[in-house]
Length: 470
Image (tube, rainbow, N blue to C red; front, side, top):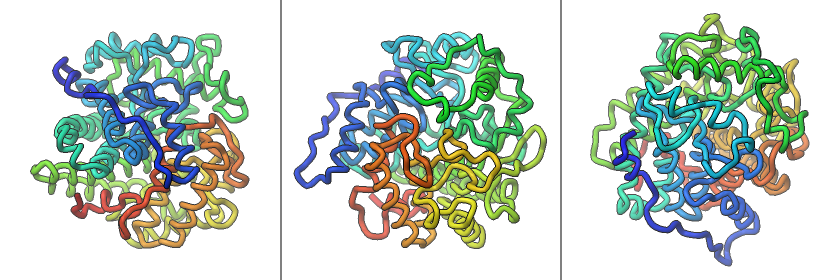
């Protein structure tokens, strides 16, 4: 990215500090305080101890919550992330804060070597980043942030500046990551999908020779229980995949790990709808993006829907087959407006049935099949409930007319967020906190659910449906 673009995306002026009104609920005040504590001046860290840098999809979710306490800060959050975009369009999954010691997080900047190993792909020279990506929630976040204060957004030219960056991000995914040839995007590392150690990855990961344990030190274990975190074996495979990708100059192509993931593609589709909304706001044509979202939905159904499972499954691109594991990722397409009615009904049956137990044995949505052999209620994405996926599914339920179930899930999210001190994730049965507390997106999405909205547009559902507002 050239220096002019870097300057254009830097925050302008002093951001607004949060000053809670007397009408704010105690949970609202506590959630806002978490985001205030994580604010660095230009972005928000997910967790001061465990995740001390800026993470891509975390920042998108955080901006969605920040818009309710400071629309300017929410805009700045996204602008800071986009200032680190690579010339090929990718938005890196980590933007490193140079003031944080190298040993505070692994893999650190000296592992990724973005400015040298990523030179051919157009990595920025003035900021260090990782070389992989995360789910594309950003356009949806940008539209919702705009709606929070359209006057401020227009006066700052917020959408005018971020739209080309977001469009380049989608082009990168659609043109460089269709590794299966069927129109869907593939992830090339479990970290890219965001659900790092899901059992859905076990089969394709088994092909990867792990990096030697002595070749890296896991900083995450300094801040979390080993029982809650990925195993050393899995971590060694993550390191091997990342180092091999780096050593190829971050060029995309067939490798040991390539997976078409339902949630990643569903979020891309939702963000295509949001980009269409942004284009209309800017007076540009939007029909091509609307059409693309619908074509991608068709491809998602054709390639990843499994009727016998009652949900979407991941596709192992290298093996050419669906992976027979039920993860929460396969439920996330419920947030798509053009999903066939029978499939939406099937997803809701699966969500509330014995495999995920929503409304019965669980109040939040577990990250993995309750009946699966690999289920673990405490270990990262192998069973615990996460607040961002439950938030997405609350949107999906409401979008498809399941107001009662959506309201119950909303209440469950708010209660569990407060009771767990805004935990990173929780035991899906008991709500016991796991991982970090005071976690950024948990607090942000709590704020979003607490905020009053016009009837019929709870959680910004029209941002996905494509109707005009604001």
